[in-house]
Length: 282
Image (cartoon, rainbow, N blue to C red; front, side, top):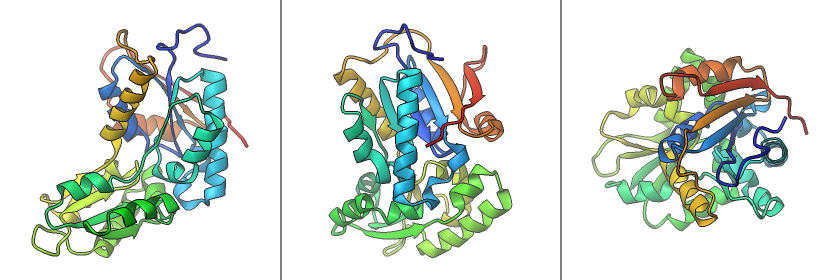
């Protein structure tokens, strides 16, 4: 069924996707920045986490999900709410859909350099992200301005996806320790880049190992602001009406339902949330 069949350009929804529930952190920022917009969020949970897959696999899945959102929901823009998918697939998505505004994520290294006083910055992200050419190009461009302590966090997104608290605690301790010494003195790490959309949800656990003074930076707000700019440029920004959210998953929706209750800041009152299990296959 097409959910946007008779809508004007501005009224059509914005598509948002991630390999699972992590992109809800970006969706929160989008809804705050764009309160009149309708969103279709797709969690590709049947194939999560992308961060432990190869570039070719992630690129193929991203293409499948993008086509589904275009053909079924007639989205007016696509937010790739996943650092891994951005690194692996953003150029292909833009080439395949030149008329569609496609907004991606990248670990917030530039804002971190601007904020850091010690110029020692930790970056926690998936292995696919930190080993991507896109990330290496970004890091190299800033190498003269700061020292980056790069930590590929194998298994952490998956543990968050499964709400596995003991494993989350163990991995946070392991990866924070691997980053180095956190603090505000010379040579210490005073800024932590959360380079995966899942990680803002475990900020409190990470704080146990970094201390309160260390700044955490994620990409939700910059992506939301960029989405507003792109929609304004194309005359598709919704400026009135009540916003709405449709949540979809490629797996049974229980994990998405649970994560939504915990992490998605939905307003009180009538439900603005629908859930369904959608099978999207290559």
